[in-house]
Structures are given as structure tokens and as C-alpha cells.
Length: 270
Image (cartoon, rainbow, N blue to C red; front, side):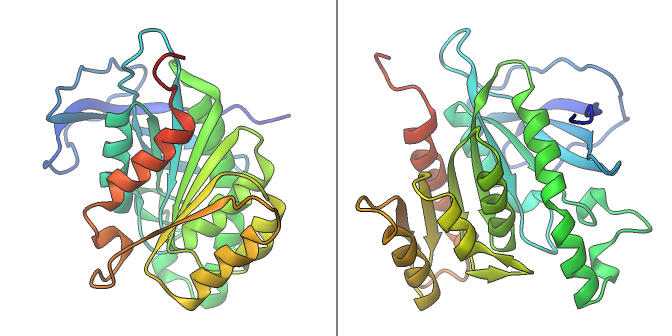
């Protein structure tokens, strides 16, 4: 039986998009969500608990649904190894604006989820690989919590991973029937002990989009996956070669939002 998840809302506030993370006194318990204008986004910092009793800090972007009483699709965003949830803030804000309920998460040992005992920055290569192998538990807890929120569709989950986070996203998609699509930003075929290429074989047919600079590894990963069926199911969206990373491209958030929106958001007239 799935362990009950613990939620503590630390603060909730409308934030001007260009502003930094909110500060102020910590509040626990339920918190109301203020309405956000077109120039702002609304974010709640939350704490949730994994099946192995770790507390992880995340940011929840409540949906700004344009359809009254219609449940919003969910999107879970997973950062790169050694980074933190702020890495994907721009994408989270864009998805919220499009009508998604979004959760970004500091994985175990990262960002505000670090502890004296579990800290990515202090681990050697073997320790980091071992820690990453446990990170799927973080996604399990996050997805369960997100899909249980009021106003969120309980069976409409999209996943977005960046670099090593792609390995965790693909692994979760393999095990969660609520996943309807995934966006992989600069994935590798093999990453920190995860066989992404093999996992993609196991999720054959799941709508998937890869955003990356053109390179041999990405080309082979997409071609290999699409060769599994007569109908290609992995789409490739290129990034200009002048960009150092996918996240350096200012168009990436809108590309992610547009592609996931076509899959997850109700179309007009339905």
C-alpha cells in the first residue's frame, strides 16, 4: 500500500515573473492561493515525504484554468543531477500560464532537499550514482502528490526532464499509467546507471518529444525508438547550435508548453 504523503505549505504568494524566490516567515498548514495577473505567476513552496521517509522541498504552481470547473492537466519537472528546481522555473511558469498545474522538485541531496547526511556536492562518483538510483522514489512521491491536488486531473500527467533528469522521467513513465506524454531536454542514451534507450523501448508509443542540439547520440536515440513501430512516436525539436544549452534558448519554455499543450489540454469545442 502506498505510504501517505505529508504536505506542508511553507508560503503562497503571487510573484512578479522577474522577481526572485519569495522570502518571509514560514507558515504551516493550508494556505490560500492569491489570484495572479497576466504579469505574475503564483507559486507555493511545499514539502512532501517519500516512501523511505525523506522530506523533499518543491514548488507547486497551481493551475490557471481557463475552463471553469474543468480539472487541469499536471506537469512534473525534473532537474539535472547536481542542480535544483530553480533550473526549470521558466518552463514551470510558462506551463502554468498555459493551464497546467506544475510541480518542480529538489531531488534528494539537491537544493533545499539536502541534509547533513545526504548532500550531492559532498559525494564521490560512486556515491552520486547510488543516490541517483534512489531518485525514482522522489518522482513517485511527487507524482502521487501532484495528481491528488484539488483542481488537477488525476490521470493526466506530463513529464519534463533535463539532462540526467531525463533518465528519471523515462523510468517513471515506464511505471505510471497516468503519464500521457514526456518531454526530454538533452537526454543521453546512458546516464548515471540508467539505460534511457532501453527504457524508451519499454514505453514504445508514448507521445515523446526531444529538444536538443543536433548530435549523433540524439539522432540515433530518436531513430532507434521510431524504428519500433510503423508510426513515429518520438518527435525532435532542434535548438540553434549557437545556444550553449537547451535552457539558454529563450524559446524553449514556449516549445515545451506548446507541445505538451497539444497532448494534454482540452481542445476548443470538446
